[in-house]
Length: 548
Image 1 (cartoon, one colour):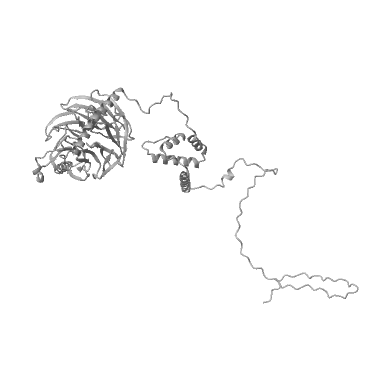
Image 2 (tube, rainbow, N blue to C red):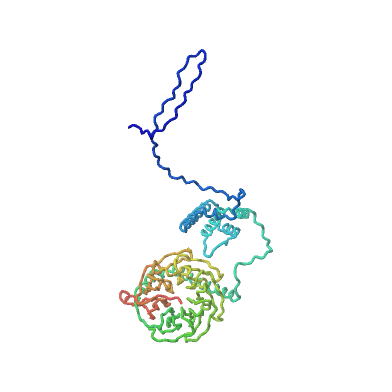
């Protein structure tokens, strides 16, 4: 195809350059310029996308050409990006996790003292509490390690080094003339006298108990296994003997008199009734003075008087004929349980004000206000020697107190829910506790640990009670409407007493272990006695010796 003449571009003719001939040289031919090919049509090119250039900041210029300073930073603030709430939370979580990881690394690298006394001294020098309520030695050391790691991470090394220097510095000798103040609250003179009386009483009782245990061990005529088998066989033959309505409202407590001829019951109506045994059909007396519901009732171990506790924050002392002897006032919240000291001279009460108190029944004076539980105190019991007291509370702890010195000597941890009842074994060194975790735990005071865990019931354990003579068996009441009897030797199930239609609130056992009384929210009183038939007919004449 020939190119179109209109499309061609004409070129101006190039002038020929000639030089004049020089002498001695031949004439050269004229230089002809090279011919160029005809131009082609231009190839269309694809347009390139526009390239984004970063904005350049130029200060505003005034009319006279000088740079004008900006009065505010609004222009630069408008260029910041907004972060969503979800992104901010994710970033905070990541920063917190990183901070925790760094603290753990620093904590692992910091040298922490292992001696508990040194740990306390270090915490004191760092301005931290030396101990927290219920804190153990390992927990205290872990708290110190975490604190030191955090201080090291935050760069507060001066404070940490100062604490190190103080640890390494020699201790200054304390002047002997400076008086040392005891770390306790001095009680009244009556409390000191009561502690002395309790110490004298407990020494005599402990001597008798140890002498009896030695006699039973060394005397060849004493067959402990046979006596245990006989007691467990009697418990295994327990059947319902009688049942009667005790009140119009649910019953909350029951207690036998020391001779077993009277049974006392209390209820949510605030009324306490005394029933004649063995059929609980005849009422001896009706005790009415509480303004709120009655929570517990207990007979004295030495005479014919009884004490009641109520939600009106008071406890009262009665005679069996219905005469009010004493009213104990002082608690700041409703009462839970009440118990007599084995000497019969003192009364212990627990309350939801987080304290338990010791009272003199003759004068009605408050001898001891004992704190120690972080939550409400519910259960209380005294050792048969009279030297120790046990308390349990809604803080899931059971504490053992030395009444002669006022110190908390043992803290038993193991229950995962509130502990509602405690009871000492007649042997003096076993303690049973039951609570809302449906368990009954046996604690050994000598070994300072849990000896046995009984998965006792399908609901909370409202009360535990040892057989009062030798602790041959243990009875537990529960809100699952049952009362279970467990062997005191291997804690196996001996008998399950079923008959109540609602929660069993309390139980008690006679001194000769021949009868068990239970009260329930179904408003009934039930008495359980050994049937004495079947294989036990040939042993019907056997009796168990009772040490009075």
